[in-house]
Image: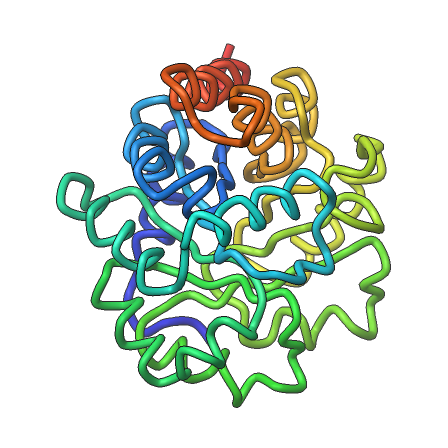
Length: 277
């Protein structure tokens, strides 16, 4: 069930295809390590080379995430991040960038507490382009997915190594924007993906959909990103980027003068690795 008109995500992938490039999708947790620092990182991601930005909605129990992203959520929540501030970050971003797609990623609880109808309206008005909500299955599409699509947002689903041919059609049915292929079983950042296995799985998924397929979980380096992207439409880097932010922090978990540059430097390296040779 695609959106009735192209979204920023659709346009970005069309542009990348014309340029012969693969997408670099970057993930950061909104408000990590604090609102001001996170806002600066977000603002700098496009010029550093991010094609699409996944902005994590901090949650106290991120069950699918590994230690790096769990800690980033904890830091953000401790610093006072909430959904209002996350949407404020998007609005601020849109004041100077009208083209880079932003996808809010996370869990249903913060959306439910905010109120579905209100959230979809406010997210759209702030400039959000899509949602990845990892704990809302296709069987509950009427709860959030279909209203999101009706509001003009892409609803992006995850396929995994255990998504078999019987399950895949349900995953793809109302997905739009792109398909996020989880390259490993388990939590984010837990292991490195096997490139040939990933390419075979992406090929299988692309046999069932016209949507772009990007690969995430376990991609840490430029070399890995380049190898994975060779058989996909893009790669997602999250845990490694969040870990780079964490390493720059002071002993009490605060940002300092190097935090923004540490994050953006990694994105520049990843982007350079994905440039056509």
